[in-house]
Structure formats: C-alpha cells, structure tokens
Length: 262
Length: 262
Image 1 (cartoon, each protein chain N blue to C red):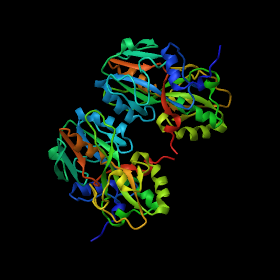
Image 2: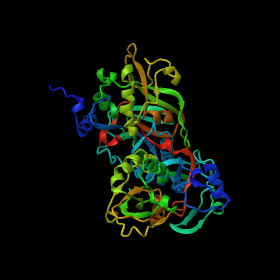
Image 3: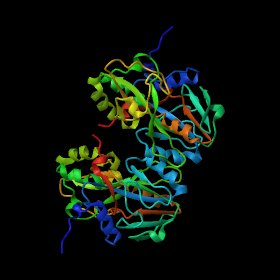
C-alpha cells in the first residue's frame, strides 16, 4: 500500500478523498494551495455577516462569496456540500450535527462565505525555517476563544478566535515578517506571548483543535482565526448556519502565493 | 486676508468650511489625512453593494459602513450630509442634483459606504519625488470610465473607473512601489501607459474631473478609482443613491499612514 504525503496531494484529489469519506484536519495538505474557512448562512443574514467581516478583517478576510444556493465558488471548483472533510450544522447557535456531508441539511437560500485560513501561510513559515509544531505532530492546530470582542454588525457579535503556534524566541520576528505578507489569510499575529492577556487560561485545553507542546523558552504566537464566524454564530444564534469543522478546511484552487503581498 | 494652504487645514476645519458652503476638489487638502469616496444606498441595496465591493476590491476598498440612517461614521466625525464639498443625487441611475448639502434628499434607510480614495497616497508620492500634475495645477484629478467591466454583484454592475496621473518614465517604478503600500486606497496602478487599451480615446476629455497636461515622454499611469460605484449606479439604476461629486471627497479623521502596509 502506498502512503501518500498529504502535502503532495493536489486540491482536486484532496477534495475527492474528503467527498469519499476521509475525515482529517487539512493542516499540511496540498502544500502551496490556499485553504479556506466556510460559513454558510441564509441570504437574509448575509449582509450582517459581510459587514461583520468588513469590520473584523483580521479574523474574517473574505476570499469569495457564492450566489444563494450555489454549491461551488470561483476559487473552489468542487461541491461545497461534500468536499470538505467535516462540517458543523447549527440551529439557533447550537451545534446539531458534525458530519462529512451536508447535502441533507442544504437549503437553496444559503450564501457561502469562504474566509482565509492561516494554514495557507504555513508552507511559507516552513520555508523560512520556522517550525510548525502541529504539522510535526500531524495534528490539528490549537484554537482558542479570546476575551476580545469583535466589532458587532447587525445581528452578529462574538469573541475573536485565535490559532496558536509556539515559536522559538529567535524566530518570532521571522514568523511576524513572513505572515504579514499574507493579509488575506489573517496576516501578522494579533498577539505574541502571555495567553492570559487574551483570556486564555490553559493552552493545553484549546476550544477547538488539538493541544500542542510549548517547549521551555518558546513563545506562544497567536493569529486571528477563521473560526471566529462560528463563534459569532454560537453567540448570536441565527436560525441556521453551516460551518466547516475547525481545522477541516476547504482546499481551494488558488495558489497561496496569489494571496501574498510584496 | 490670509490665504490658507489647504494642505495644512485639519480635517475638522476642512469639513466646517465645506459645511459652510465652500465647493472645491479636495486634492491636496489636509495632507496626511485619508480621504474617502461616499456612496449612500437604501438598506435593501446595501448587500449588493458590499458584495460588489468584495468582488472589486481594487476599485472599492471599503473603509467604513454606517448603520442605516446614521449621519457620521467611525472614521468621519462629521455630518455626512453636509461636510463634503459637493454631492450627486441619483434616481434610477440618473443624476437629478449636484448640491453642497443633501439634507433635503436624506432618507432614514440610507447606508453610507466610505471607500478609499487615491488622494490619500498623493502626499506619499510627493514625498518620494513623484510630481502630481493636478496638485501643481490646483485642479481636480482626471478620471475615465474604462472598457473593463467590474465583476457584477446582485443588481449592481458597471465599468471600472480610473484616475490618471502622468509620470516621468524614470519615476514610474517609484510610483508603483509607493502606491502599492496603500491597498486600502486603491494601491498599485491597474494600468501603465496606452490609454486606448483601457478604451480611453482622449485623455484630454475625462469623464469626471479636469484634464491635465501629459508632457512629451511622460507615461499616463492609471489607478482604480472610487467613482466606480457611481458608474455602477448609472449603469444599474437603483431607485435611489447619493454619492460625492467626483474629486470632492470626505476628509476623514484617519491618518493616511494607518492605511499603509509595510
């Protein structure tokens, strides 16, 4: 049996594998291709979310928006209902299902928002010599709800969610420099060091994803995270929403370099 | 009588002068402070416009969005109905008025979009030694409707509008480099040279603003322009809209450096 290196799997094949039932975090998959968060909301809530994204651009950089009921997107030549590894379905802010296929939950009035994901810049971090612990461990990135409120928009409000990567002190500046080139996929960190200042009591107990070891001397570095929209769904309780399962992303047909600035 | 240098007038005083009746293009005013385009649309068209902006980010970088009926904005501590030098009022895409005060036209369901303006980076161009002809002539910048269609969104479609500045050949690279640092106010040029390729037949007859001399050897350099939303209004004929008169901008309370990237 051949063991595939997920980094070498092209987006189309990754989507086919997920459509066929594979459930896995997508960190490290399809190196060089941008990944995206998904939030699908009924059309009558779409303006609130698009405005929420405009007001919280670090957490919610919008890469693409579908027409109501559309199941693919200009940056995603697949089926948004089946081609992510896992989804979460929400009713009035409560998660009612986590499934690998949301065709049974689909509605024709859903607008899909694809939002930049920090997995996109991890290849650039590795290229620059910055180790990425959750890639070494083949686990999901740890994510935390913070004590920072997003700017509300209409019916939507909620806390900022962050992802965390431990970085050796001599490489923190490099990590900032490299990721600041990717504003469309969360860009530079929002916070370096002291988790308590973000209201994160225990790095070992993330709200989403898997914990990772922070070795002595390493600095926890926090980036705004595209799970923030789902935290807003949980806090604001719209009648219906679908998101990706955190860390189980849409792998797009856009090169990560397309989202880099000079 | 003291002759004021408009570049030295702070935003609050500029807005007061416009509120008191002064009508002038704002190029060169309040150096160091960001300027913004205005589009006000009824709430039921706001989603279409916000999506249009997301799909056409070079032309429509959204800096701020008001709540329906609100008359100031987080980046504009003035009255959006009176504190710009001039406005255009549209009904079904036809301009029905150009006035210095739109209080008589105001509606409580209007959402105001403030969109980045390339006047914002002109101080940086001057600092870098790039001459800006319309500032030398104390005239408005020339703007042109192009043959490039914007990506439509819902009920909105229309052509890309560009502003033009003639640049000596040896400074074109500098102009690109400097302005690319300001993506929120249109960023790098969309086109360098040959106006005909954009469908602009005669640089001497701009669609908005004033013509400027292009000296022998100078290269016309084109930036996406925040009048694009008004061209979409003219093309798409929403029942009602208000915009600024081209070149007669909202002077904000945000430093232009706040919109610069590293």
